[in-house]
Each structure stands twice: as C-alpha cells, then as structure tokens.
Image 1 (tube, rainbow, N blue to C red):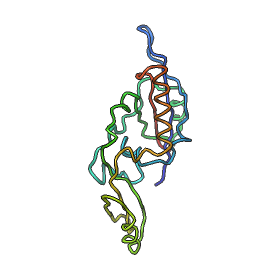
Image 2 (cartoon, rainbow, N blue to C red):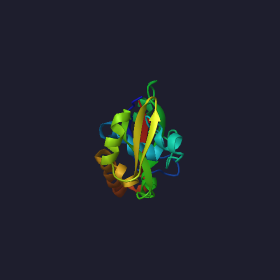
Image 3 (tube, rainbow, N blue to C red):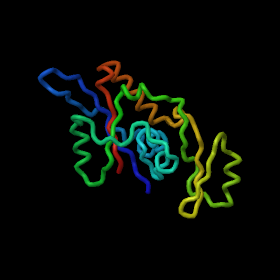
Image 4 (cartoon, rainbow, N blue to C red):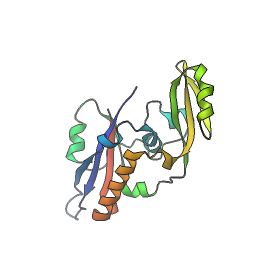
Length: 179
C-alpha cells in the first residue's frame, strides 16, 4: 500500500511563565517529502513494507510518538479528516543528535520477478539482502543513514536549521503523518 508523508514544520517564539508555548505552522512538508520513504522509515519506522522494525528487527530511531504538545492549528485541521493517521514529530534538538553514519537497510528494488534478481544484484553495491514476499522478490541494501537523506529531506533540515538559528533550537520541529 502506497501512502504519502504529510505534515508541517512548526516554530515557536518561546513561552512565558504564565503562557504555554504556542506553535505556528511555517512550511508545508508534503511538497518536499511526500513519497520519500527511506529516511522516514529509519527515523519513524513507518513504511509501505515496515522495513526496519518488522522485517529487520531494527527499531526506528524515534518511532511513532503521536502528536507533540500544543500542535499548530494547521496540524489539528489536517488531522480532523479520517484519512490521516500515525502522527509523530522530530524536534531540531533531536535532529542534531542523529548518528548519520549509522547503517540501515533501504529498499532498492521492490516487486522483482525471480529471473531479474541476479541481474539486479550485479549492479548493487555493498550489503544486499533479498526477501521473497507475496510471490515476488524485494532487494534491500545496507546504507549509511546520511545516504537516505534525499533532496527533500536535506531541504527540510536546512529550513529547520535556519529557523533554529533565528528562534532557538528548542523552538523548531516537524510534525508528520500519513495519508
């Protein structure tokens, strides 16, 4: 089942002792990372084949944690629909703590017929594992986490850094969910 990754980058101007932190949505993430599953699977554990946790026994780095405290109005509005599910989030401070040299498996070819497996394996670099599911073969290659970060994710992290430099590291996060 194919799904899209949706959500918002949120920022806050901080809080005061008499008022809780108020979060505003500043960037719609769906245009940047909608179908970019590799890094999303490694960070949060959700993918079309539940690759890391259910197939390989590797827990996601952050997992599906539900909504953060005081989500923005945009997030709450998106989640009013029955279509969205499994909300989770990542703060900028957590992003800074990620070990980008950690190795994880990512899908390189899904739904391959048996006759093509050897041909595809010849073109793959590194540690590749073949799994048979639902009558077809799926090839997974071990890569460093930083290799999962395609252009859309790189853009998200650059924007997070920009807002963190301007408003403080504890005032930037992304909230994501699936559709």
